[in-house]
Image 1: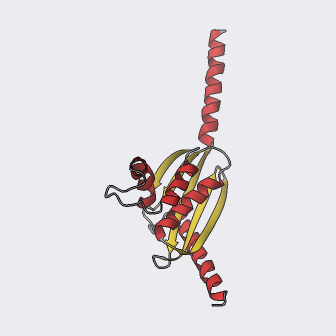
Image 2: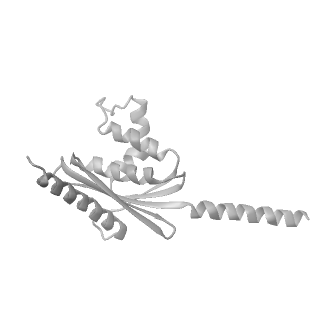
Image 3: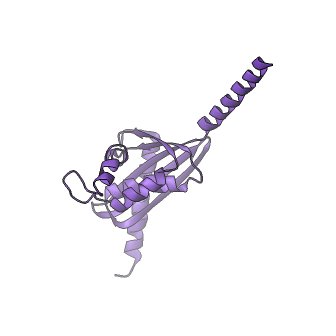
Length: 173
């Protein structure tokens, strides 16, 4: 009986591990800007099992770094529950910001090592909230290197810029 119970317990653990492994979403992100600062766009691709969702947006005046951050933030904010998330980005700024710099900025009251205010503090704080419920793994890819998903989110970001430019040109001014 103990051997049967033990095997049953093992099966339950294996089933739970399978559910956790299948509960992983991949988030591919990119940001772009036409001029820095200028019209900016971001793109995100969420992949969960066999399902994909594309997201994009932008701002009339922004920077590339802000758009890179908004791609990650908006992708994470789309998730309805805590998940394992693999974030694939070509932005060293975003990845290192979260994994290396964020804790120190907070300890110093949102100041850099040179005691200057951290740029994009509003988005870093929003990023921290968006990341909190998830177990996150970061993966950096070289931009414009043929990575299919990175190329796709770059297209989404650039299309968002074009939409903003079209809106700007259609407004009386």
